[in-house]
Image (cartoon, rainbow, N blue to C red; front, side, top):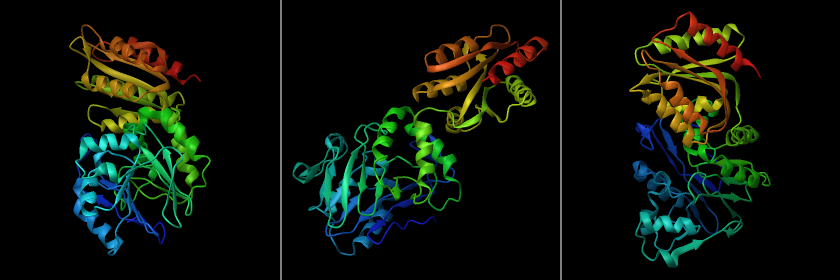
Length: 389
């Protein structure tokens, strides 16, 4: 278990979920997920968010143990998504004198999810720059709309210099998972928050003026050391810059011939001096990881079979997901395959042309069923051109 100690007065009360198969109904999480929640103990007590219904009982036990008979004064709701806010109504019912802190959007959504008795008289509505005094601790509210819901806000506790960052700086994996932060944080970021880079950039600018010693996200480990590393990663990701020099080959193949061409293209690129080439059979590999790799590298080659005079569905799914996540600032190549009427190339080109600042590198390679001398020469030309700076 990673260290969940924050301080004597800021206590972790979240829970790990090792049994979940799909996060948000779509993302494979082989190492589960953590639902983080925190309690600030002072003259007044603030509970920072709730957690998902899957761990309600464990979470409530953690709350009761931490409170040790005291009553909470505030529940601060940073984000209304159910994996964090599911227990808002239950907690409000258990502690009827507890005030509920949120912004205007928070309470609009709260009334859609819950029927909380006397909510209007219990709510404390805050906006950018407002503060909440707890005693020795003082919360400053930072609005973070569209990171990644419109009501999201973060809180900075000035005494202990803690940033409660909502879904920002989160990652997949339970707290006892032994792995580097970057990979699963990257996969989490681009698949969940990635569309909203400008909103993340706006929050990073606000955070730049704060003296932060600890970041407490709603998923993943508490971050205490080398904070510049995590902030720098978020700056790169949210500005849509390539993170790593290399080429990602995303290949969707029906009977295997397109993937065999992908293997040959990988070898060609490596022989020509490419430092890093990653080949993925996107029909079989985790689609969220394919999204991650498409953003991670500055150059991508999309290879697809034709299907029903159109595009093979796995490739269409990948490209539409990338488009929906605001994919931009990349160089891409296109390789199509078809036996009698190749159609995949123009379909890929149409979707890519709707993306911002994505350069399509010529030639668009056409394979007729399997590689021959002509299409192999086209692959070599494409490799030369995509390797150019």
